[in-house]
Length: 389
Length: 128
Image (tube, rainbow over all chains, first blue to last red; front, top):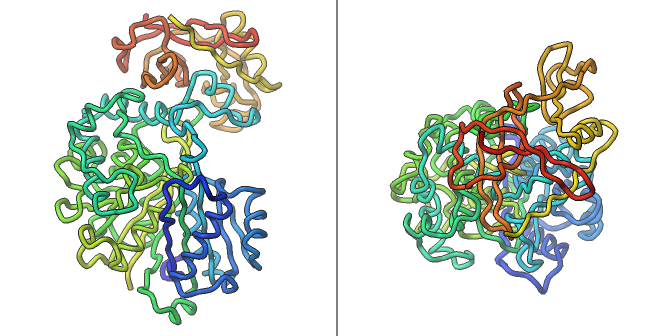
C-alpha cells in the first residue's frame, strides 16, 4: 500500500499579510481556506476532510470546523509543530487513498507579530504534566539556544563555520528580493550575517527566521476530483514522517528526524536526492537547513557547510535551488510554523508559478521538508515529494 | 551583577526523590536492574527496555560538555548546555561560575547546585 499517485495538491494559498492586528486568528484561517479553494476551483461545500494543528484555536479541529461551517467525514489534528502541515498532506493522501474523503482542506494561521510574542528568546512555560518540562524549563531553554546547541556541536564535530551558515541566509535574501510580500527584501552578504549581533552563540540575529503574522492553506484531492479541475497537476508521490527526541539521555544533536523521514519519502517515490530540481527546506534557523540537507542525502553528513557555501542554494546559480519565496529566513513564518509555506512554494515551482526571477526551469520534481518543535530536544520531521504530471 | 532568577521545577510523585536529593546536594540517576543502563531524565519505566525494576543511583558529578550556547539576548546572559555524565546519560543544564568565553565542547565539568525559587536546588555544572 502506498500513497504514490493517490492524491494531488489542487489548491494552495499563502496569505499576503505579515502584520494583522486588525484580524482574528479564526478569520485568517478562513481567508486562507477561501484562497486555497478558489485557487483549486472548488467551493466550501466540496470539502469533506479538514486538517489543522496546534495553531487552530479551540479543541483540535472542532472550533474551526464549526466556525468555517464545514460538513465533513474525516478530520485530523496531528500536531508536530511547524512540520504538521506536511504530515497533514501525507495523511490527507492516505485518507483519500482509503476513500475516507476526496477534498481535504488544510489550514494554518497565527499572529505572533501583532501579539508581540518573544518567539525565540523567551523560555516557554508549558504544561507541568509534560514529563520533560521540570528537567528543562528551569535552565532557560529558548527556541534559539536549543537550535544553537545543534550548530555548536556541528561546528565542533565537522568544522562547519558561521560563514558557511551565513550563505543560507544570503541565498534566501537573494530570492526574497523578488517577493513583494517578504518581510526582509534586502539582499544581505555573508559579512552582514556574521556581523549581526549574537542572539545565542553561535547563532546571529540574521541566522534566525522572521516573526510574522499570516497563514496558508492547501487543498488535497482525489484523482477523480483533479481530472475535472483546470489547474496544473501536482501529484503526491512520496512521504515520510519521524519524531526524534533525546533517546533517554543518549542525546545526539548531529542529525535530525529528516535522516529517517527523508529515506522513507524517497523510497516511496522511487526517486533519489539527485533527481530533485527544487527543495523547500524548513528554515527556522540557518542550522536547521544545513542539517536537513545532509540528512535528506543532498550531501554527505558533515559536508553541509561546504555544500551550502558559494551560492549553491540560489536559484539559477547553484545545484539545489531552495526556498525561492525567501523562506522563513526572509519571507514569513506565520504562527511560528513554516511547514505550510514550504509546501506552497514547492507547488508554485511545480506549476511554473514562482516568480520568473527564481522559477526553476522545467521543474518536474520537488521536495518539501519540515521540522517542528525544537531541533535540540524534541522535534517532528516530515518529508514530501511532489511531481508535476 | 544581577542574578538570574531560576524557576522552581514542578516535581510529581514519579520525580520527587530526584528533587529531594537535589536539595541535599545529590544528583540521582535512574538505573535499570534488568538491562543495566542508566537514563535521564528519570522515569518509572526504563526507556530502553520498559522494565519497572529501577533503582536510584548517586551520580559522581563528573562530566563533560557535549554542547552549549550562551544566551546573549536575555536580561542576564547564561550558558545552557548538554553535559554528558561519567555514568553515560547526557542532561540539559547550565554551566555557571565561569567566563562564558572560555567554554568549549569536551571541557570537563563538575556538579554544583544553585538555589531555585521555592527552596528547590538545581543541578548545574562548572568547569573543573
